[in-house]
Image (tube, rainbow, N blue to C red; front, side, top):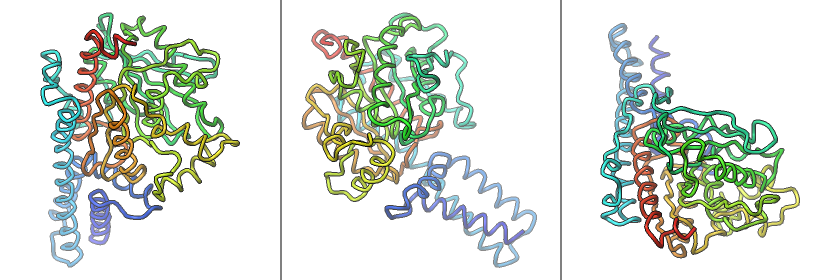
Length: 415
């Protein structure tokens, strides 16, 4: 028993250490993410398990042997690491608030309805983060937005008593353009926003390598066409449409926001308005060419993108640049709220920094950037301390965008 306890706690300690300081190295990104995500976002639960395990072992076996004492010491250090992770997650509230004030103005909250800034988050969802439900939210599932089967279906989430004229939020799932389902990502945000009166749409799209770029983006734009036509049936007002997504979904969200007038991405439906009024990409991939000189972006272009995502006859760098949000930035870009974790090992944070820097230098609209200290990739997958702070910040950002879009001469009025 002492051997197994010691082994468990040493593994526990290694996982915690990796969450705080991810394993370095270009090829360690995936294992560092796999080991670090849970320790970051489920830290309260793992802390409770660690303390319970140590207490039970101490009660049953004492601390008579060296292995017992080493195991208890490892449990103590792991517990301290989990406490640090909980604190880091809670500090996200301050980080996103500073970002909002920097990007929208220190008095931005005055533009929100009186109850918007005091929105109550479902902190009770932290107890069981896998149970992502809300009794006030109803969902209409597997609605076809184009012919072609399940990859061309979407789900609509809305309050059971949604009044007409609700703004719409489109959620695009991630998965490296090769895996993923609309039911798997963005659920905490959509449940919260739908409960607050938004109409939320989660969309599937064709996946690689069977489907090559730009099939993914074309499908998303077809879904936007469906939303423009059918959102009113669920209480939505498609004149204000925001888009969000994580990882590959963050890339696609940014591309949707930056290519409203590119008719080459709307074959057969060129006349449909595919513009959006706000964009909130999470831990997205923004540089497809690697022209910045960073080794990991160059390797990504040579491996993942060339082999699985881009068209077989795609030319480097021109075709890659056309699929890169970094190369699509214009002065007419809608308001952006870019979020990224400082400990992201799948899409390192310099990608986001470079994208935000260029976007701020060009765009006429607000650009908010929150770099979440200690956060790994996919920090918003389930309700967590950090994730709930981010959800509140996204709600406030979008609330300001709606408020400003309703002012004469604003982006919404112009569109």
